[in-house]
Image (cartoon, rainbow, N blue to C red; front, side):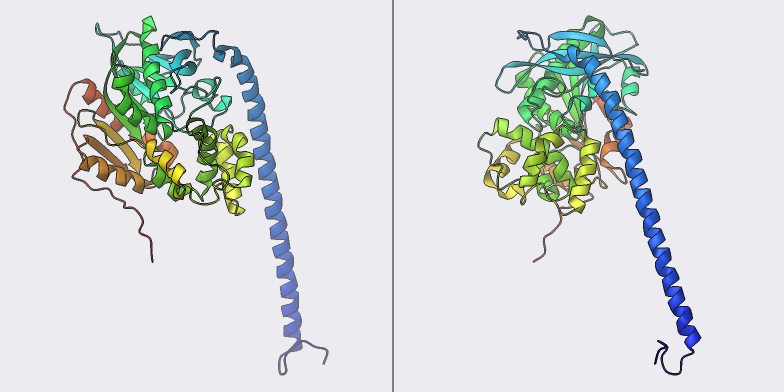
Length: 436
């Protein structure tokens, strides 16, 4: 029996079916070929764009390199402005400057940080302008990722910087010591971040045309939220001549062990992990790396930490899809790592230090539920906490979306109006429960 048709079946039908199958297989092959060509084309275009941007960025960094070189010796007076120049971008309602100023390492040694200073066009009041100290989020440790050195220095400032200029506030932004300047850059290390923030305010006050007063509010996003919350704890000790009156944060990386415990096996682990690995052992020399971080992770840590966040994030996504993990296991299960995470987690602020936190329930980086735990903990401790919960906002846009409410809240603090609490409204998300 030579025909493949079943008994009683028309042989011509079987022939047609075979031809249809062959035709379908050819179509599928062509589809796969087209998809493969599209992937290669998109990858080539993306690679070309990245390489073009790298070459453009390299030229810019070469031109800026001399500006960021520290003097020798470094002045010991904190807040000394080493040099300053126009930022070269349009700032609605004001003027932007790039600056290099003296800050301090946690061990007390002076160091230089880059930063930006934004001065409003409106006349200054006799007592000096109020100051907002902005702390940026995780961007990558490389020179080109540094806000004041980047091709987009106003990143993250939509919806609030121009409004602050219109209200006559000075805005000063730290790059953090070691980011764009000689390192190390101490990522998510409270004593480093808070020093860089308060010393940026001192630097603003040392620029005569800024007319910066002593009253300031710390405001930050993501890593910068961690910085601003810690500034709330440490500013009065670090800079008693200044008057920190409140702090604000968007999607703050605050509950560190909870965030790390939830994200260690995701692409976020490949972005945050390398920066932590490059920083925390400087502060915690006994922090174990082998057995906590994979060999592949350790081999790529320094390179990935210095990639800007978009490139690092793309690589993190690709590695996670390939089943490659940065960490061997949840680092929080290691006693030394857990202790470091606890030490770098900001505790509830006292009632006389009002705090505003904006958090999105859709945030895939700083997950919502850890900051829900923060709300419960801080409210129970008596903190004057105002919580703004957002929906359908991604991590990178939280500061911009919350910007108008942040400006309004800060204006009330500068005006001396009493701060309220939102503790009677429970968080919309809760920590996930484990089964079994």
